[in-house]
Image: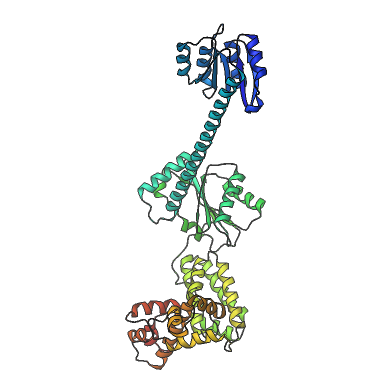
Length: 508
């Protein structure tokens, strides 16, 4: 309901208008009546009406004086002027203050109702415009937040951030924080996604009861920049205890904005601190590890002994070798990047020795291994792998007729550079390629392209064993790689862990 104030120095007119107008029908309510300008001004300051219907000629403060004074504090008030004189000068002065409704006395109910309806429509249009502008401002504010997130992400992930990026980051910190000291907190969860990370940020802001946080999401990990606090580790641990979640949290040292160019803080340094820690831990800068790259003092894993244990179906002894090696890496504080490389190499060498035992998509597995952030995740992976290797039935698997046909055609066309699922579908099986791909993946457990690649690499090993003088470029041509032996060698090494040249030179 819109509030209306009625002003006139004649009691009869004041009471008459208040009675004849159906205020509720116009979505209005009459909140007061005044008999002069000064009394009206006091009511305006007290009630803040939306519309004022006022006489012009009144003792003390007339209508023109009233609108002049009231408009200074309440510019959104709408006015209807009443006058017994049809004088242009009154109308001209009223128009200076935006008054567009000027009624001559005596005026009837219809005239007042028509003026009220027009003003109510104006008020609604203004409110819609204001709401629209507020929405636009909110969107602009969001855009600004998105820009801040992007700057923070680039600042944390660029190996050598440009000077302009340092300046933008400094400006954001100065505008957001009261002090020029800041810290970065990383939140990581194995099963996190973007939505979960965003919810975590909202929960964190509510817990700390502050909006002075700048955040971004990298690889589904939440990064929060906030004002430095000597008790931040205690607060984060309290947060962790009250929420009872399994997020791993890394807290950076305190940094000064003035020394931001010399700051060697980046996302990758923080994420590496998780590697040798258990999941769900809060890691403060006091417990940061200074990683080493010298591996000379580290014992090597005996792969042959590992394979012997697996062939004897002793997965526990095989896992003991893996965990002993991992704990030695931890003891020597070997860089997580180097440690990952070791584990990926073990996997490739292991599968090259046991390629006939278990079918798997090695490209997808390598990508998964590269994403692991905890040493214990590697332990879990190898534990599952050893269990699967031991459980795998060495007897040939039975496939449907269409998959058997695909495998036979792969064997026949393994030398063909054009060999692909689409090529076989069009030229040999005359079936839908998408259907064939889905059936093959479901029964074999890996994509058609991955199977063909593995088959070609395994065939290459067979040829090398039979033909000791074979050249790498001859292998590439005979196995469908055309005149690109370099790509063939790179692919071979990625799958087997060594190049075909190394086997040819050292067949044992």
